Image 1 (tube, rainbow, N blue to C red):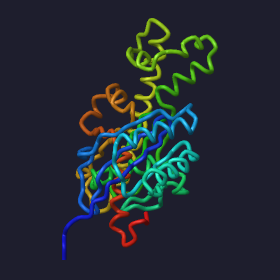
Image 2 (image 1 turned 90 degrees about the vertical axis):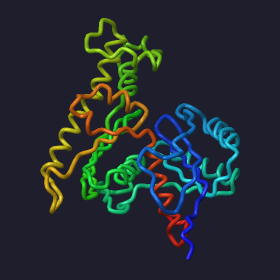
Image 3 (image 1 turned 90 degrees about the horizontal axis):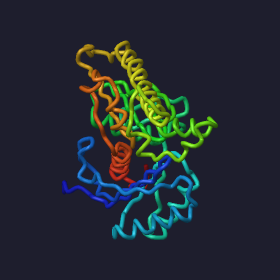
Image 4 (image 1 turned 60 degrees about the horizontal axis):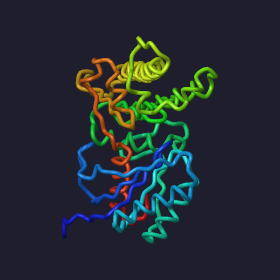
Length: 300
């Protein structure tokens, strides 16, 4: 009997609230890659918010053709524009003759149990992040912090039970809310995104710096408080036959603003934190790998 692993060239598409990212990679039907250590961490991205579907598809077509790759399977994870999923599926069939698989949150994956009352309503990006983090730290309590347009924080107990989580506006959404809802600040609406995050202090002496510092520390402080509450519950709910000392809590950060948020959090959290920029892609890889191991490799 041959032990040779099957490998498929795979296209992963992650449609977030602001950006659309894609990655061509090779996925084997067995074996593991350490969290954040994949050899295929590179991805391409475009901004899709505010653009017509035709423009997004044109940019995708150009990017995919320039990659000069022929995927054997295509997976899509979408948290924002559901209509775009159908358009991208059609593009995949047109360019590659491959029907894309649209991923959804499920009640169970391996030993992970979804904590939502209705499993499919948990954002698929959050579900994929939990799957990836669990694979990296299978014996730990895990808190997944995704800092992007929105910030999500989810708790995963060491036995694989998802305890739920929270969602709140990210740095730039908070800034935009001030610009849109406060008349005297409307003039700052053209504030450059890079400039808005350069100066982060509570001792601001002008309005731009005050907004930058206020929104930054609002997010960092909110994340810290939520982590504290989640860690307390972990302490109160130790898995059977496990000593309190033996179960560590790992905080996994991901998202476009992850490093920025991490820099502004208390030093106490430094020792138990991990940054994984491609957490959603890592989760997609694991689901793709699982689908390849099934008798009918088209099932997910």
